[in-house]
Image (cartoon, rainbow, N blue to C red):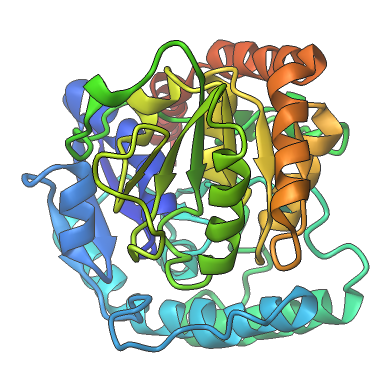
Amino acid sequence: MSGFLFVVPPLTGHINPAVGVAARLRARGHRVAWACADPALVRRLAGADAAVFACAGPVPGADGAVRPPELRGAEALRFLWEWYLLPLADAMAPGVRAAVAAFRPDVVVADQQALAGALVAERLGLPWATSATTSAEFGGAYDGLPKVADWIRQRLAGLRARIGDPAGTTDPRSSPHLLLVFSTPELIGPRAPSAAHIRYVGPSLAGRPAGPDFPWERLDHGRAGVLVTLGTANAGTGDRFLAACLAALRDRADRVQAVIADPAGALPVAPDDKDVLALPSVPQLPLLRRMDAVVCHAGHNTVCEALWHGVPLVVAPIRDDQPVVAGQVVDSGAGVRVRFGRVTATRLGEALDTVLHDTAHRAAAARIGTAFRAAGGAPVAAAHLERLAAEPR
């Protein structure tokens, strides 16, 4: 049997897709371990018995620091790299090296944003796979921003000189051995790259722990269900947007029941409200089976999970990869885009009416969901990793 070391950033949306793959590998008898700056988060998502090697590194929100919410476009991308991705890589590298020495993996599985995993594997001569938890890199994230793209290349060269193989030339965000993309060309679009080492496996939904308790008995099967969520990394930035959603949904309460993820408790919703269920967190995967539409920030996981269930979307991207993913949703016909910072309740209501009643959006969502299921998800991703581990050195 082989050993696989998953190197992940301390971000729920980047750990979750790997959880199902790791669970499948363990079920097949392989050794699996993790390297992360937040071991408690990995164990919460992957199971209390997960073997996790702790690494140093910034954990978003742990020190009270919050990225300025007004940053957009090139400024937001540069801030992400300077404030998070590069410091995370430098800080994680010693822990990743120690994990490799102790665990002795046959393959390192490095998330796109856990650059230390790729560069340490490169330096030690280990085969490594990329866990592409967002497809934005393949859909034009840096189009129109050539100076930013060049700046990132320069920073990656410096990072490689510090923790990787100085003679290496591979982009650490994209393994030449195996690139696992948790999406499919049906969503990414015609620009989706094609090569022998690129594998489109669709969303990885298996192996997740049970979500929070939910009052399932309060769901009204006589009305359309709408889920509103801004993901796990946007608490405190979406109060105005959630208020606009609440107003739009209240106007449609005769035919729509809403479930809103409100982690900050910002919405004035009574606990026994029959029209709007506002909760700190929701069990998203089982809930999506009961929903007719999703309003979200265009986070890659939320978008793919909704489309896997054939649910159309209203997307309001905030920053990072979200504008690119939102563009994929619109271009595929599976949803409507609104402006996060300026949308009104009226515009949100119109967008919601469109995805609920225009059969073309639902048909496009169903088509992408079919492609996702055909791609195979976690079992297929695990099989690709097994083949990489079995290749002669």
